[in-house]
Structures are given as C-alpha cells and as structure tokens.
Image 1 (cartoon, rainbow, N blue to C red):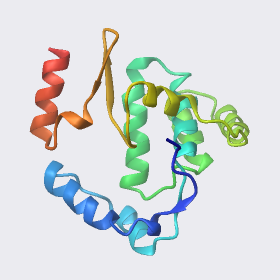
Image 2 (image 1 turned 90 degrees about the vertical axis):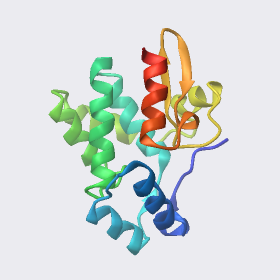
Image 3 (image 1 turned 60 degrees about the horizontal axis):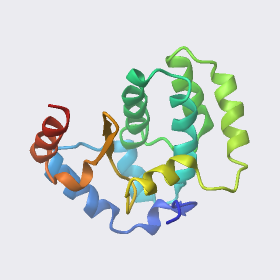
Length: 165
C-alpha cells in the first residue's frame, strides 16, 4: 500500500458527500475555508508531507503533547483550509510548542527530498491498517484499530473506554 501523493482534492468527487456523512455521524463541523477548498478542487493533497511534518514535531515533543499537535494540524486543515504541505504551518506549530521553527522548516524541506516510504506508513501497515486515514491506539504494548470499532461518537467512546478502562 502506498501513500496518496500529489492528488488534487477535486479528484475525490465523493469528498463533499463523505464530509456530510461525517458531519451526520459525528457532529463534526468543517470550516468555511476548508469547504471552499473542496469547492475549488485545486489543492494538491500529499499525505507524505503531513506524515513528515507531524513526525518532525512529534519526535521533539513529549508524548503528552502529541494529541494537541495533531489537533492543531487537523484544525489548520479542516477549519482554516490550510495545506498540510505548507512548511510554514509546521514552523508555526513548532514555535507554538517552544521548538525552533526554523530548524523544523529546514528538516521538513530536507525530508521532502526522500523517495522511501515514511516510517509511520510502514508502522501503520505492520499494525494492520488497510486504509488511511486511520486511528490506532496503543496501550500497554497492545494496538487497537479504533476506526474499525465504531461508526458514531458514542461507539468510539465506548471502545475507548473499554481499551483505556
């Protein structure tokens, strides 16, 4: 399985329908700027850039902050309509968490030059991920595919309670 690279968001005509289903199932609200990206269709998606950016931030922060960084990146995309390939996004998030934004920017640009599969994609596949995005939770050395465990907020919360309880 390879990462989805360099595909325009408009090449996913089902996106608006899928987003409406997500809204209905989870009461998620997508931002106007994000919805404008869907309508325009020209933004090029690159999952490798998102993995690189998150990985660089994650590797320099304590695990307790990873979820907050992920939330910041999700908000930037799904609310603010920012590209997850924009190096300035990672520079800004790095600075927010007290990291050297310039160093993250340089590392991001260098990492984009690689042609190998990102280690996070490899690890997710080893854990049984069949598609992306996915949601895998690790607790005490056990891994749980949270996405396959529920199709509503309540079902996922119940699964999370069983796993973490």
